[in-house]
Length: 169
Image (cartoon, rainbow, N blue to C red; front, top):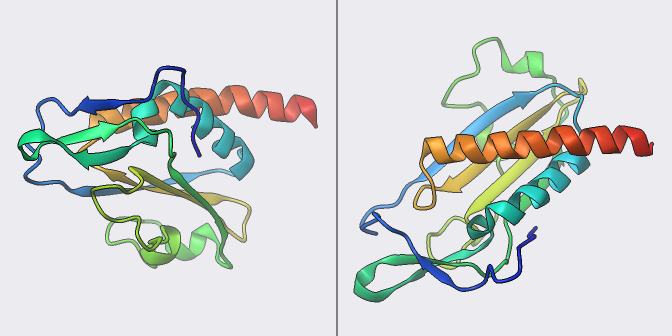
């Protein structure tokens, strides 16, 4: 999934990153059923217009530095269904998450650093009508504060998209 502005192509150096160590961050968020996968998908696409480097790919640059090439190849977005309820996860849902491999599918070839999607997002619809939103982010691209900023922007897009979704139906 990718939406980019004109002129958003090219490579950008990752300032302040030495490229020697990169980590993948996994987050798990719980939401109520008032939003749908379609709304989240569209909000993600709209958010990527402003955060277009996340739709690119990391490449090796001069001096063993990483650069993000703003290719517009997009992020990975997965929708899944689970035959469980939120209550079956218990009250204290903390790492290590039960059945994490089902809540965030490890798409073959997507877990590397170079030439791989920088974001993997999965929305898992539960039997009770709620859903779990899980993501994997290449930490080279963003720290926790940057991820929160991205998620807040996406939430604003979701609110606007959800309103339009309701009005259309």
